[in-house]
Image (cartoon, rainbow, N blue to C red):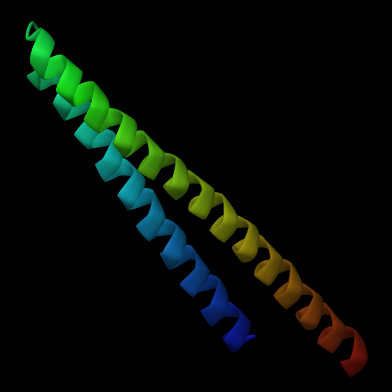
Length: 90
């Protein structure tokens, strides 16, 4: 059980880090849009940068989804192991 708990906590820590990275990326986008209000040329440059950041953002979202799936599988597997041990002890 300790090993399963450790794996689950590690998985959740990775998810937490991915969520923080998404928050930073979103904050960057909001900050950029606030800086260019009224400046058309700056807006064009920021739009290009935001497009690049959106690609990174989408990669991060995909990574987060994959990590969440992995975490869910690990938890289900650990739960199955615990239940099997309980059943075999009785």
